Amino acid sequence: MKRTILFFAALILLASASGASASGARAALQDKAAGKPAPSVAAGPDGAATDADGKSLSPATTDPSYIIGPEDVLDINVWKEPDMTRIVPVRPDGKISLPLINDVQAAGSTPQQLAGAVKEKLRKFLTDPQVTVIVTQINSQRIYVMGEVLRAGAFPLIPGMTVLQALANAGGFSTFADVKKIHVLRMVKGKRAELPFNYREVLKGGNEEQNIKLEPGDTVVVP
Image 1: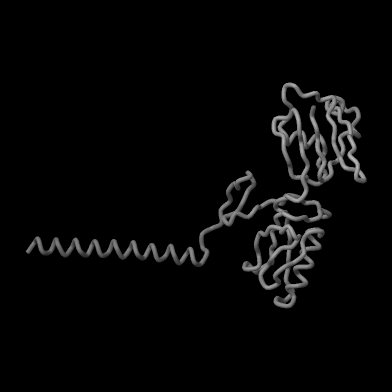
Image 2: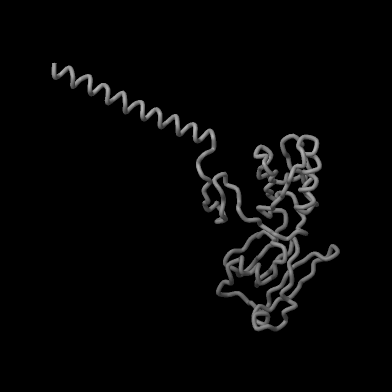
């Protein structure tokens, strides 16, 4: 008799535990479906802060006059419309694709101009849509650093970037660098021009006009 009572008591405990576990699993699934978990902030692959969906929390540029180009990455945010809000790349043809309105020309516009264009197209489907556009990655405009630097290669051209800033991105100089004979190669009216840059003099405050703002396609050469 005592063994029978213990057996049934054990069955009741197992059933109770299983029910609690199933209930917890159902609750977890319901929370996930409802989107209840609080958003988290983490570091993305490039070190920038991102939210739980991997979205960048900081723009690549805050220059309102920046002209969007092919391969740039944009955060298109439509207020209170999560299905319309997304991060999209600019295709090589200069366009982006969005729900409802399909293709939109992005290249050649500033972020504000593109936001206005998207807003205008959405008026057919939404009442007074509020649209913001943020450039999260600049890939369309690049400069190059070559020669006796620690990290030669192509770098995104941030608006206002100078020769000094480009050299900093390249990690500084190698042991054999001739920092007095650095120059910038630039195409001017179809011809290649060499613009001198004396690193030591610029650092001392001389020849500051040599620390020019770089343009897309410029190459900084460190002999």
